[in-house]
Length: 336
Image 1 (tube, rainbow, N blue to C red):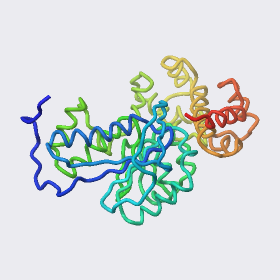
Image 2: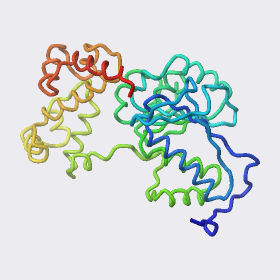
Image 3: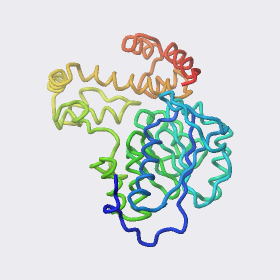
Image 4: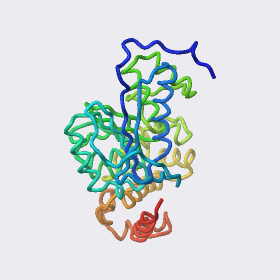
């Protein structure tokens, strides 16, 4: 299709393309990577100029499999980059396993040169492990937030779709790569080009770093009831030290009996049961994403007794915390 009549005029075009270095980690998320590259390609197309170039690296220089099992060839192993380059680490599943000592040492060395470094999807973990996010704001996919917060206390974790703090960038995964790239393109070459790229991507709702990655509580539960949403929010914010149903009810101006009826009417379960499910969900995330002991996981999720934790976990997931961790360890050992 001829787009010559749609080209965006670029004021003061650069003498050479701005280069992005994509480092593909095993089991990386294809959507995050593809969304970033496509945004750059379309920016070149809609400007009629080579504003951007990109290259692919892997730890060894060998092809890498994405989480969907598709193999990607790369141009090189981890080599020295230029100060003007932008490094984008592409993470996905099993991020702890693929964050190797070699990768961390390379990241720390390159960071000393001062380039912009981004962690896409779960790769915020890799940046944090390298010490590149200390005392900085960051984000990561909501599924990994619990484990990240437990491990990296010096990082100010947010729920934003992406975060830019100095020369460090993190994204929440999924389509948030598009939002980030549109922001970078707008910063480099103006809003008109970013909007033209969004139009080509059929991306009509551009998010900023002020937008959060998860749906609001009313949207998630399918119910718009202010007091119910407020109680659930308080539950989510107090997992380690659970609040009693009577106190929750009091905080929203209801009796315990009214709160019980509210939960049973809209969620078909008691407040106590709903709260327990939230705590067990966090426990499962910590078991599968961290090396925390089962006892520490229990404490982090409001269980004073490991035996009570194990009993509740088994009743909900039909397995024990120990077996869950063992099964996950076996799964992580598989190639994908």
